[in-house]
Image (cartoon, rainbow, N blue to C red; front, side):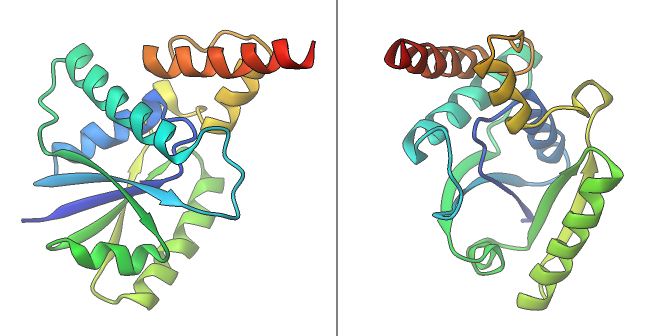
Length: 173
């Protein structure tokens, strides 16, 4: 059984992430959305909130697109990805690429992961054109300034972003 591990901070999860996840799920026996715990990264949402949004997003996307999704799991990890993947049978790391600039960084990371664990390969999936401009950072910036992002994230994520930024606005008023 081959397991694809799709790591990220998912702060928040977007339709771009979910599109890559479900495409990987059609290629591999199992896909693990691996939420990275990175104490150096300042996230808008807590670990628990991100886990909750990922699970809700997977369920919503499966229902919306009439996809199965039963071979998709959500996990969290702390430390090196190359070490985390050893918990799975025949692991492959999945990374999404939106542009050439993504490739340069992801290529370095793939080589470093391979250096740390020679048994793991990285597979790149090109982002769907519909989501090629999308990132969690962009979504947060649009939400912060009350822009239109409703069709770019699952409804539950949209609601969490709206609450987060409207509560901050009230606190700063």
